[in-house]
Length: 167
Image (cartoon, rainbow, N blue to C red):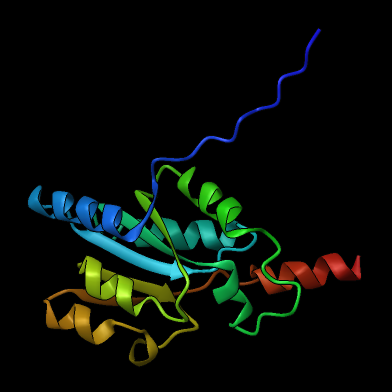
């Protein structure tokens, strides 16, 4: 009896910038409102899920800019972060029904993605005031909206990592 190893599948919703731009143009022609958010999403937890559900409800299509491994390391989240690789994090996010596209980006901010994709709605977590949200001015100038969504108390990746360490 032979044992076959599973071949990893590439999710069609994990796209590069050119593919994302094409998708956004197609959705826009159909009249869909495009919501954009970004982050590390290192260990997906309830706080992330509720945040993404609320973000998705603000439009018709949800696009996530995912910080690359190198970008996460530059965010000063700790020497061991990210715990999961960018490919793993992208695959987990793309598996969520409410996510339409995931784009891994290597820059420190998602400004290039926001400029290129031109979302109708820009969303960040409540720890970001609107005046600190990168690209807010661009989205507003196009007639879009910017939202800082309330965080779910007690749920953060840093908190989970600390809890695991304490046992």
